[in-house]
Image (cartoon, rainbow, N blue to C red):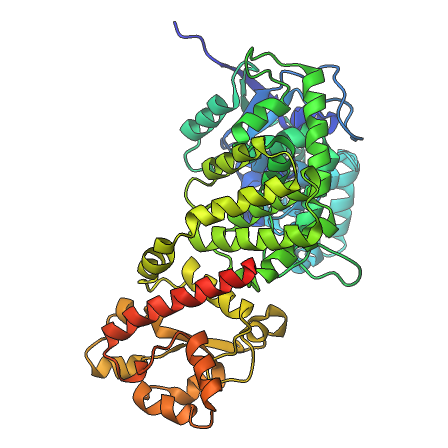
Length: 584
């Protein structure tokens, strides 16, 4: 007979809440933000009140639980012996409603979920202002279920308040009291839990989760690491959460991680810390290391776990340092990128931040040199989508190449050597123009072209305003300051029999213009609007404008397919010139 890897345990709600409070059950707030709508929490309590089944819990036995200290200062009495794998939303719902504790939403906003109960018909509702004024409702069931107010006193207070608004006879008083007693008895509601053995590794846990919970959000390795942080280094998890929360909104005063490029999640910041601390991109190995596992023998060791968490702690402190963070964001600006609208891979951005930190901390590359080489590196990785397909594998290879690097000059030389191996003559003249034959709205070559215009100090088409200023997110109004203009307008192409969106919206048919100019051009043929709008330009201004906006000589009278092919090559040339300006 096949040996099972789990045991079957039944917990009353009261025991679950008690063990969460004691820390026996690890309920990490950030394993996943609380995503259930309040209405679903109401439905959970309604189902339990009716005696319906509400699903199972999945726990994983922690192999290093008893008697082992946590890293940092924790508030729990013990290190959890059970880690929550599935059922976090249900446990969080129970805990927040019963204990009156707030939950953390996806935007890191704290919110308390308050559930009301109407004894007259056993109805549960999400509490609002109207319910609070309705004497038929218990507006908050927490004081009863938490024991804050004794059951007898709670019933007495409810009935007294109701009688102050309407008559209540003895029979109704008995029914209402019974309903409130039944509500209190929910503390004995039995939850079924499957407890996986400590011998099960994280890959098997993830497989079990997927097989028995196909409707749930799939677990990833970052989930496991964040769970471990909640258990063994809770303040580190909270630091991650605080950083990511602050990055979402501008600070009223003082320094903050807020920026216009990315609103990082804890998972993403974790990628940076792991790459910096352990020189690894595959989180699967890092999870095992942080558990204190010897990858050869498979044995768990408390001493090994503590040492590895210290490495993570040091790396995270460096990654969350605001000066390091802001200095890296300057790299993106130097590379010509102005906002998150131009970023097509957030993972790629975070991996570049990790390499930036490695260059600064581990190889002591001076600030100016590091900023410039990382600007070149980011430009290359963004343009070529280096970290889009199999990002962990590619980053693992990049980190592996650093093993032979001994000093700052070798670090810079390595990155430039990789860049040179990608940006060959064939890439600029053949590969890049071919990749620009697309109508995709968000494509790396198009944003690299915009970045090149910023680097080259280009002005918008027919404008005195620089592209960089018009793309600045801080200067945006109700209407975008700059718009993508069809050089061959849609209406004009339709008259030529070209109406397919994929053909009309080729990126080679777009140029950046101020929105007022875009409206003015409308569907006028390029052979008419271009001479009029450029009539007052001197030859040098006209030449610069043609160069920046990749407009071949006589483009306005070309047939459409010929124009697209010629402009793709010209745009690729501008991108190359922008990159070479970075090279210096």
